[in-house]
Length: 114
Image 1 (tube, rainbow, N blue to C red):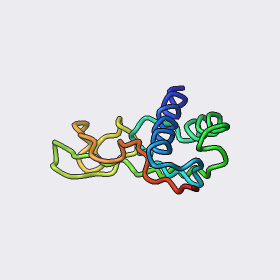
Image 2 (image 1 turned 90 degrees about the vertical axis):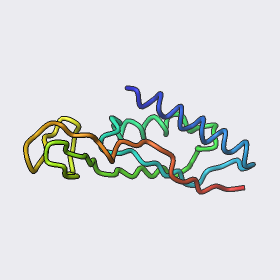
Image 3 (image 1 turned 30 degrees about the horizontal axis):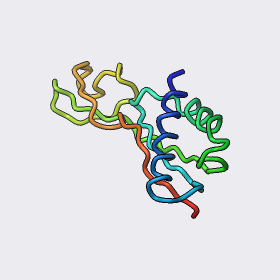
């Protein structure tokens, strides 16, 4: 369950931002976890909620957006939607796909209290 490690990294980003910007509490944390990022969203949410007590994230609403996967097919030269990295191109059936979207895990926004 690498989501606990990811949650720890996200918490460090939030805590460093709180120290730098001078706020103490986060009302809402918005994340993006793309479909191809290799992140189990439910496990990430659970890990963040487990780490939140006593931190700037305590009591914060956690919103996790899940952008769909997208890839460039080298065989047919088309951008296609995919669900997993193992999917074939829905147009030509080829497997020479380069992911171009849905691979990100990032903090999008923090709504904070002073």
